[in-house]
Image 1 (cartoon, rainbow, N blue to C red):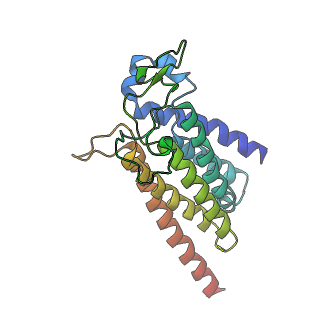
Image 2: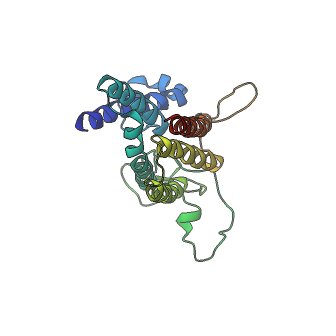
Image 3: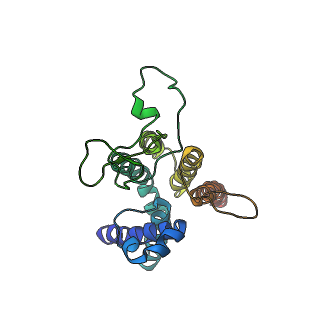
Length: 238
């Protein structure tokens, strides 16, 4: 387990940085050395994909049940995603949403849960703050949706859901397939109000996260169908 954790950590960080470079290629070309070694700028899906490939290779080499391994990791992956977004919200690392000047839907809702300017953000984005000296003295001129906070809530709720059904799913791999589907759906929906760099593909302009989240959902659905049908076939022939 220790070797797998270290492997996932190393390849997860490499993948997260690599996908962030692909997503922000123009910024990377301006300052490649500082961009590579910057602790900021990590893409979750890049880490997930590269770590999964590394673990798959390790599991095959050591004859470890790959689907059982993935099922064991699925709920905690969702939990880690939600908890990781706390850092994004507190630091203000650019994972915020689009501008939001709409009135609050509920008067009791704190302002920062609906529209937030991310004062003292680590990206130093926006305008200078009055009476602030030193680094991180900027805030956004127009409030935005605090999407990292929304993802904290959704991550925790989806973790609770996956944890509650883990013993009810008897076919190995189906819990992981379910994780792929709910993770992909959550990220696709949040991208609708999140700031990101769009791509240009045959006249369409999806973000990298929208493409990957769609592929994750489809992959999870296909995996669920294949595994459950295979299990039924095996049961009927035994």
